[in-house]
Amino acid sequence: MENKDQQYDRFMSLFVGTERAIRGYVRSLLPSSQDVDDLMQNIGLACWHKFNEFDLEGSSQDFVRWCCVISRFEVLRFRRSRARDRLVLSEEVITLLAVEAEDRLQRSETERQALKHCLQKLNEPERRLLLSIHTRGDSISRIAAESNVKARQLYSKLNALRDLVADCVRASMAQGEA
Image (tube, rainbow, N blue to C red; front, top):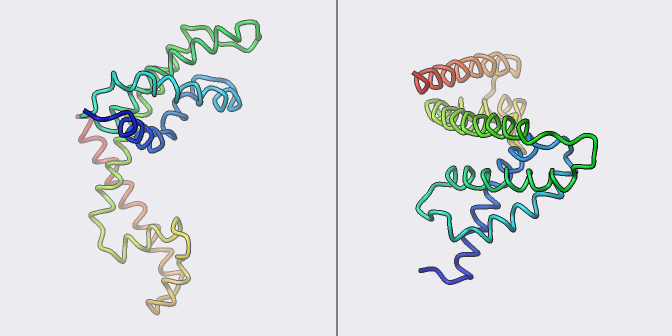
């Protein structure tokens, strides 16, 4: 049995690691990003107060789904408190948006796993080239200089690798849906 400090540390580790996904879910239910910012604190507190109900054996994806359920109720409570505003969505619309957002979260995680798997299939130089445009301090021109290859050739190779990985992800996703 964890003491309160250990339980809090575990909660914070899970919440901070998944906050972006939870925030994206909440953002899909509210018309204003300012409302999302206001509500995220309440959601964090509500999740912390109910954390003893979460199965600690669950994955971070289970934690996200669990937080999304709590978030939906917090959004509904928030919406009721703002019912005087003209730009408030009905509970039915919020429920529909919530279901769609939960589906998107699952698809995003599946796509992320497929992408990770497909990137692992590449050899290290190909992976570095593909990721170089997203890695601080790395660039096509730097790789070109290091490998004594023209940057134009590397851009062509990069485009081919993007197509290869995109096809791999699509195939992985299709196989997972079958």
